[in-house]
Image 1 (cartoon, rainbow, N blue to C red):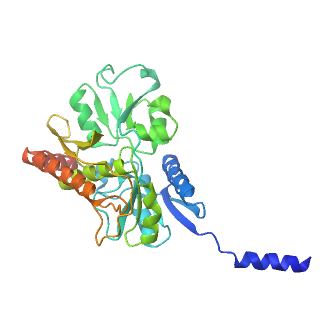
Image 2: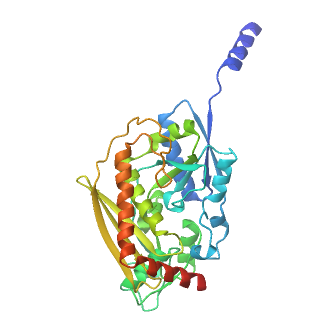
Image 3: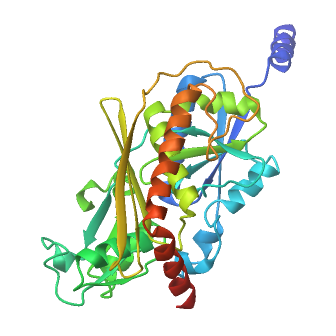
Length: 348
């Protein structure tokens, strides 16, 4: 008996330990749901690996009494996670792509962009206004949003409404709406509501996985998550935003659609009150490829994204489309609108 026991113990000691991949995420319920979905996909692709989720709070999670556009920090929801990545405390981090600046800190890259869900905004009404629309809300009704872009677009279309900042995670914002009398409605991302399972109450929509740029092992690991169409659409969108220097402090919007081999890119800028705007659409012929092994390149990043298993040509075409649309808007006066918006936002 004892001989068999020793043999079993020796075999266990000599068996290889299952490798553990540490995945960083924010602590909110939505962030955990998003991260769980990414980890489930990776587990299916790599059954021999173990995944450990490490949750942490970010600056954006802690400062809840100030509008995002006023905080003056570009990496509000990513800095602490990137710090853990830099210190090798985690191997990869799952973000909502909209939270990742178009210029990442040195040493980091977006190693995967997952298939996008519904990118649209949703209006959620206070229980007493269920059945209403924004158009039929009473004069001076207050609508909450954490986005200057949403506020500017809606103020232009619904001048009878007032728009105020509302902060916190989805649970917090919905509780503020339901339990307080300040807001008649709030604007949220449809994708977030759907991921939380709150269909009855209905970046945006895409998840990005950030890794160390030189960690080829992890880059190869997360590469299976790339959705080619979402990747190309996000490259075009991020190129547009980067060229315009769009961020939380200015009302800039961009949207893509892929149809019959054409990538359509629509972008716009607004004044803070929505009274002035420029919107244009451009398109380019871009074939959406299947994934394939394309071999490493010296500098494969485009707008902070590394996708070595997707052909380079379509990626460059998507980036060029984004830059071209940004240049078109700039030629029509977008810079002046954005400069004034920044000045007014800083002054208030």
